[in-house]
Amino acid sequence: MKSLLDYIRPYRTLAILAPLFMMLEVASELAMPKIMTVLLDQGVAQGDAGFIGKIGGLMLLISVIGIIGGIGCLITSSIVSQRTGTDLRKAAFGKIQEFSFHNIDTFQTPSLITRLTNDITQIQITVLMSLRMLVRAPLLCVGSIIMAFSINVKIATLFLLVVALLALAISLILRAAMPKFKIVQDKLDKVNTVMRECLAGIRVVKAFVRDEYETEKFTDSNMEYKNISVNAFKIMLLIMPTMMILLNGSIVTILWIGGYQAQAGVMGPEDIMAFITYLMQMLMSMMMIAMVFMFMSRAKVSLDRVMEILETVPDISDPANPVAPKEARGRVEYQNVSYRYQLGSGDSVLENVSFIAEQGQTIGILGETGAGKSTLVNLLPRLYDVTEGQILLDGVDVRDYRIKDLRQRVAVVLQETILFSGTIRDNIKWGKGDATEEEIIAAAKAAQAHDFIMELPEQYDTELGQKGVNVSGGQKQRISIARALIQNPDIIIFDDSTSAVDSLTEKKIRQALRESHSKCTKFIIAQRINSVRDVDNILVLSGGRIVAQGNHNYLMETSRDYQEIYASQMKKGVLADE
Image (cartoon, rainbow, N blue to C red; front, side):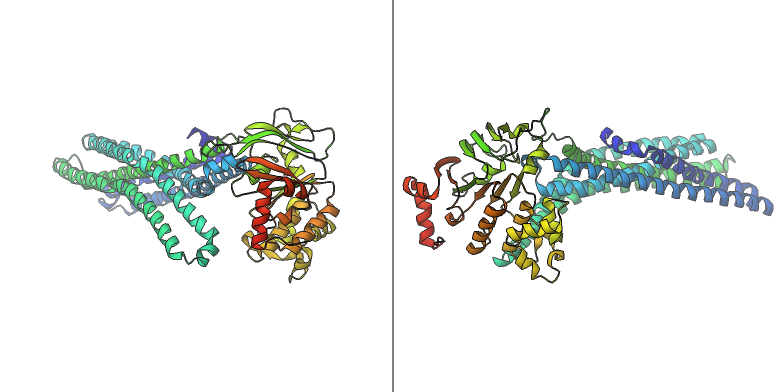
């Protein structure tokens, strides 16, 4: 829990005030039974109305002080817990922004969501309870024992025995329950994974009428989560019957011993009542301690999961001494580049890849599924890092650039089109936050998005739903292309980013790029030869290797792989003369 204290430390003044306020509340609760005994013994028994009024007023004052203490503790502890959770969530979210694709693949997105939400909520609850109950309960327990000893030492000794027995029982129960809370969070991760996959692919689920299958899959995961949660809390519920057995047994013992003491004139009935009250307070405080430790057990698991994020060292980071090229042109050179995914089988996804892209050239990349096309271009902006070899941008290894500088020079239009909630204008300005209206329109026109945007009721101020659900796939791709073009980068990567765009519109986009971004080096991953037939150089990938490269005419004469792709697309009617 030491790491958690680092996040509580900025609010240490409030964290100190919370226990002090709680001491007022506990002191008032401990004083009440004793004062009540005096009231009954010297006021009610003697019929002294003045004394009763005086003690009654004192009890009212003490009650008000206790209420002030309770409210003060609640306010200060709530502020500390909420601010601690906010800071922890902010730190974890900021850390995730530094992660490479490999780091994100390691944790998996649903697990990261659970850690930023449910896990941090568990920590917040525990901080709140610790500042209240973890202060209140020990003070109430110790105070009750002291007050009991002040009344009758012999019966008070029973309190120590009850505390020892209850502490032993709680310890054994917590030891059995703690390992299960780790499993509970893992099962919650699984529930979130299934739920996220289904909601993200709800259109596919509907199209294939697989709602029953997805419902069954979610039900299975949900039942696993429920069962392990129930098992964990079943163990924790043993605390209550254990406490009740000890409580009732102790009350019977107090009444039995107290009866003999009363007959001997050592104790009065009011003392026995006070004893029972202090016993109840002591056992309730032990119950509170058990509850706090239960939440601390869960919070320990949650804190470990959050700290796993915070303590992760991103495998892609800025170099100690960043280097910048003398002249930024956009020349790219791959030198014997190989890459293998760390979470995979260990086989190379890319092997010994070498080629050069001069400034202003357009490079097409073709190949079957799994050939390594996306991996090839993801290495350039360091979304992953090469395993062997190096990639040079204007003569400087990309690993020697400051990451922010590198990625500002390399714009990427990813295969999966992602738009964010907000207006179309906001989404295009993602590429350049200070873009003018003229720049936004120019980028949209180059991406062939301006015409359909102007047909919308709110035009550029049209609000997009989550992931752009209220525009078509082709429209989303054109908005994402505009987002990349407005950045005015030295290099643009199109990762199969026109797959939902018709051939005529795609041709217009290529023509616009030649005019507006002629000096920009472009990489185009495509499935259709028509998308790359007029580029400067086409790379044909197979099994992670470049098996052929050259322009369309050269490859048609020399490459069997290219010829097969061409023949296959001719047969399917994909190709057309342009």
